[in-house]
Image (cartoon, rainbow, N blue to C red; front, side, top):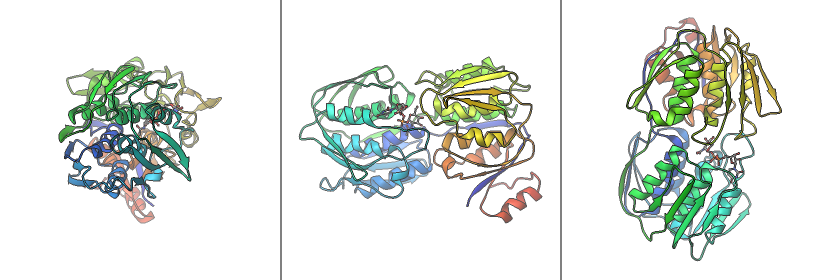
Length: 438
Ligand code: UD1
C-alpha cells in the first residue's frame, strides 16, 4: 500500500507551479461529449478523478485522445444514443460522474448514470440537481443505484436553487445549454470553476450569461462545435501550497494562479500575520515567525472555501492563542482532527460543525490515515511542519486531486517520499532526510 513518509521541521522555500482546476475540469470534460466536433482541452490536471472520468467518457463511445498528461482531445462522435449508461467500479467512487447526466440529457435527452460517490464529508444529497432536471422537463428516477433521466423535449425554465450548490449549478447549466428556450438559474453558486465551465460551453457555441453571479441566464442552442480551451488554475491546490508555506514558516512563490480567486485565503493569511505579496499571476507567502489565531466560517465563493478548511486548521493549530472554525457547508469535515491529535494538537469539536483550536508550539510526527482528499493534504502539511517522522496512509485520496504532490513539495525542499513497502520506508528514515530525486 502506498504511503507518504515525511521528515518534518524544515520550512518550505522556493517556487511551485499550480496546475489546472480539478473541479472545473470535471465539468468541462463531461460537457465536451456534447459535440461531435473535437474539443481540445489544455491545462487539464493529471489526477485520479480526471482519469476516472475520462475512462467513463470513453466507455460510452466518445473519443478520448490524450495528447499529453495535461492535454486531451474529446469528441462525442461515436457515442451510442441507445446505450447511455455510465457505470464502472471507479466512477462509483468519484463525485463528478454526475456531470455526465447534465451533458447526456442536454445532448441526447436521456442518461443513466450511477449515483455519485466522492469524499465522505457529509450527506451530499443531489436533490437540487434532480429538481433542476425536472424543471427542464425531464423525468428523473433513481433505480438500483442509478439515476435515470429522460425527456421528450428539454425546455428552458426558471429554477431557484434552495441551497447554493456548485454541482447543481454546473449540472443544470450544462443540460440547459441545449434545452429549447431560456433558462434562469437563481441562487446559483459563483465559484471560479462555474465561470470556467460556462466559458468553455460558450466557446463551443452555448449562450450563457451571468456565470460568476447568482443569476445565470442560458439561451439554449441546438448544436455545439469544435473548440480549444485552457482550464483555469486550481484555487485549492494553490491555497494548499500557500498554507504549507505558512505552516512550515517558509517562503513560497505560488505561480500560474489567478490571485483574485485566492482573496479569501490571502486575507486570512494576512490577518494571522503572514506576509502575502501578489503579482499578476503569482502570490508569495512568507512566514518567519509563529502566526496568530483567527476565526473562520466556511462559505460559498467568495467566502472562505470549505476545501481549504483542513489546511487552514492545521496552520491555526500551530498559531498563538485560540482560533475558531465554523464549517457551514458539509457536516462531516472534521474527521482529520482525530489524526491531528496524534501529533499533539489541541482541537475541540463542538456539535460537529465548530472547531476550537488552541495553538501548540509544535506538532510531533505520527502515523496517520488520510480521511479524505483535502484533509489528507492538510495532514501532509502537518507532517512537513512537525518534528520527526510522519507516515500518511490511504494517500489514494490525495492522489485524486493533487498532481505530483510529493514531487512539488520536494521542489520546495520538503522531505517527503511516496513509499510502497516497509523496506522503502526504512530506507527513507535511514537516509534521514537525504531525499531521492526523481
Ligand atoms: C463541490 C466540489 C467540492 C467542494 C464543494 C463546495 C466538485 C467535484 N466538488 O462539491 O470539492 O467541497 O463543491 O465548494 O466540484 N447540497 C444539497 N443538495 C444538492 C446539492 C448540494 O443539499 O442537490 C448541499 C450539500 O450537501 C452541501 C452544499 O449543498 O451542504 C454544497 O454542496 P455542493 O456545492 O453541491 O458541493 P459539490 O458540488 O458536491
